[in-house]
Image 1 (cartoon, rainbow, N blue to C red):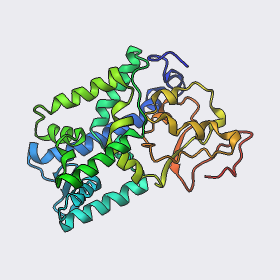
Image 2: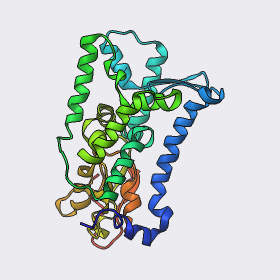
Image 3: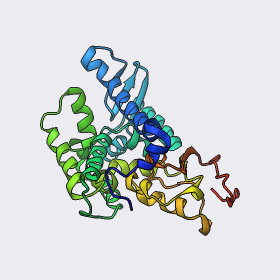
Image 4: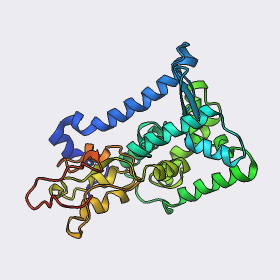
Length: 299
């Protein structure tokens, strides 16, 4: 594998230029900043296009959006949700079921910027190794917060949820909440690569389950062009999702990434100098036109 910091993406930069190598990253940051800005317009400048936060919001006084995980905890805690909360959760469920649940993690969640920064700095400093734990731990975390809601009668998780805390803090002021965010940043930087998002975050686990059968998908549609540089593995926050689609040509494995853990972040598209990866749908995922390609590979 290439040396860490300066060589990851170097071939892509030479082949596609700066924009071609950072397009999806820029679009994600624009999306994250735009979502945050919509919530900040009211408290900061008095333009109340959106009221609320990521747990529950009302857009233009009409459109409700509810975090379905918060609603689920509320139901388990024995609370009776309002009609708007149910409508808002249904809208969010339908949206992420179509575009991919973990799109929330890559395109909306403010913690993504924190963990991305830690990961980039980790590569820059050449930090290797560190702690490890099963990725399934996040699903145990998800089960735990649901059990806590059912047994305590309150939404305990939201008191310490760093996703909610960071979002509310950026709008209204963080206070001591910065300490928790700093701990997660240092944990990802020095203790475990992608430790929070990839192994512990129950919010990501929930949205991953939600988007398991989503329509929008990334495909290794030109995997025959892969030169084994492994840059995509270096930058992918969920490396396990691309291994078989990328390397399974001789095993009858389709190039489509179907795992719910994929966040459709586009990192693999940006960093690949051979344009192996493309963003499409699970029904019309493009296939390679290179010699030796089997257009009948199942998706």
